Amino acid sequence: MNAEKDSDTIYVKKVKHGCKKTKGMVMALAFVGSWVKEKRLKKNFSQSTLGKKVGVGKRTIMDIESNIANPKFQILYGLVRELKIPIYQVFYPEIPEEFEDRTILFKEIEDCSDKEMKIILPMVRELRGILKEEKRKKKLSQRRDKL
Image 1: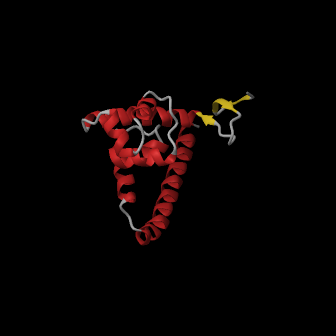
Image 2: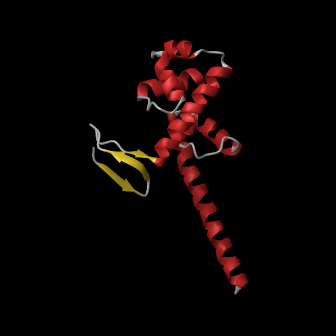
Image 3: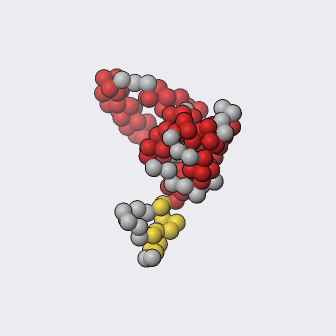
């Protein structure tokens, strides 16, 4: 087994498909495992029951919850749908759940049609540009005040 290291990689193993496990992936897997367990318990599902609903065995659910398994997309999709896990939190686990404004924004975006998205996206980009420019001006002003 060949192992390499880089700044964003916890460990890298040469595998059949050349996949690397990055820090972000490890965080995402830990998030998925804890959320699956939490949501499963809230719904009063056993590991076997959840496994049947998703189309896998109890052992797979156990491995996911203990952060051993790296679920394939089909399994992840079933878990997200069955347990109503916010998909952005799977891919961006560093976003704190209590960051409510972001949660609300993502929910609004999820509910948009394709036509609405085409209208909204340029507006969001323009607003972000304005906010970045205001932030830049504020920093410059603060630097001048310090001098």
